[in-house]
Length: 464
Image 1: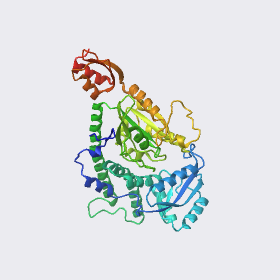
Image 2: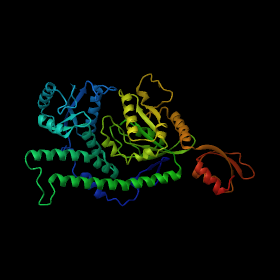
Image 3: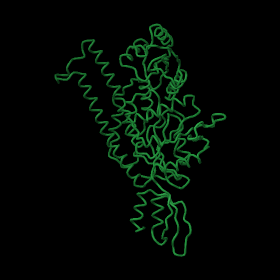
Image 4: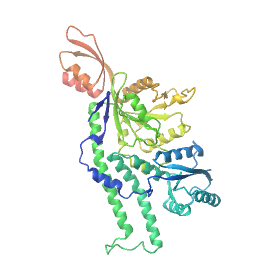
């Protein structure tokens, strides 16, 4: 289970021997890709609807910053490029065509006058199937929303079985909505209600059944992987290693921070959105020599439907069972406040336990990029993970929080050196110092130890 490398440990369920068939998962992953994107490369026209008022108006950001993020999403994909972009005001974002008649006509003319465009990315959370169909007919090219684009990014970045299954599960709602749309078109042509070869099933019913069977198969396979994760967590718990989840907005520097804290040369952070799709666990040491496990997690993004996050809930179970959360913020980003709100909202929507929400250590990363930076909140820890500034202070703060939230305690024990006591403490606790070695083969040993481990120690060695 443990692979040691430069005093760091990575624990990954993917490395465990299992009976889950790779070919079976690959078949599920490649089956019925819903986005219909087709080509490997696209030249994108980005449309950002600037909502003027109402529940959909964004107050913690600007249209220009939202457009910048949309450009970043497109540029994440290999061979994709942005050929044109436009921010257009709208008072009717709930309408089928999003914009008023005049603005929609202007937009349509602009898109049709840009012949190199192969797809339009409308920077909204989710388009209704009827809206998507209407816009595609008006513009003559494929139309994407944030859900379908981010899902395609996930699909391109998926490497492990679990990531592929979770993405396949997230695609089911898109497949269902597309199916309803196609059947509605058939009904208009008089062919949607025909039965299949005397089976008593309509085409729509048969396809819905196949989708349901596929969904059940994916969920069943994910459940088997979830049980493996549960086993690994049980093994880690038995070893009594405190677990710390590192979370934040996508591309805020989580992996870079974990690499800096653990010294794991195998970690290769990437300057791109959603570089991490799978939870991995890496061991590091705190100033007291206590071993802790840092959990690297998927990054969050604003305006994503709950269905997409829900499909990754099995992976995020590791967060639920953590002892502590580190919330990393890219403090140099112009939307850092909005990003913080989005991350905290997602954590609450995931129903993270109150004890974990109270344990969050907020870290301001990339402080070296801000001239004259000063933390406005004394509770915040400023660092530069890339340049390794402020890491010693952060490690001390992590250690204090671990002791506080895990119930570990610092004790000095009188140990018989001619017995296995000291070796047992090195294995089951954190030995900080061995002092006052006397002629009677005893020593005072300072340790950080959990109540459970101390109970086992007393029982095993009949210590009173």
